[in-house]
Length: 259
Image 1 (spheres, helix red, strand yellow):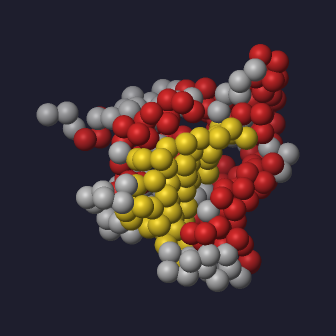
Image 2 (tube, rainbow, N blue to C red):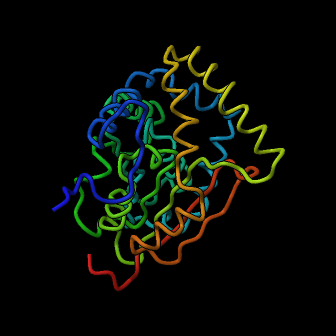
């Protein structure tokens, strides 16, 4: 029988890694090293548009966030920016939890929560083996984190498992934009300028070489839509933003689901 860790859609495989466990360990270590400059580089390299994208995700789920009885998970939360966007959208609404498997990121997320004076809980957790009960959340969302999972199929399975019947999933990720001219400009920036700037500021060139490589290998929007449907999600949709350089995927767990 094939081990569970080797089944399913291959996820991120950084250069030189041999299997899923090694890939995950590499990604955890890499993000731990860049954590001190992570927020600065996110905002600088995106020209602050990343803040707009997260606000748009939060506004898309305003009805869930405004429900004081709802539970929301920011999966692969990094330093918590999506969780904080959720909290700002509904300051007295849903319980919001952020999870990530990089402890250095969570240290910064918790410090930001204290500085902002907001109620968001952050938990160290592997997205491929979440420490939450079945049917725990009304919304599970990830902004620029799902792409880094070592196994996409298991990641989708875990999202589906922890969602309540009728609950929503949202995955915001980079994508290769359509259109000859814009896609050429995007690739030039993403593959030449961004890695150099990111490496220079963070002191970790390999992390910002990994970024364009991981995006180019990530399933394109139509393929990820099919993956979500095969995983058991319903009402699967996607919309391209900012010329197609990012895509928001949304889906739901069927109300009759057995988890």
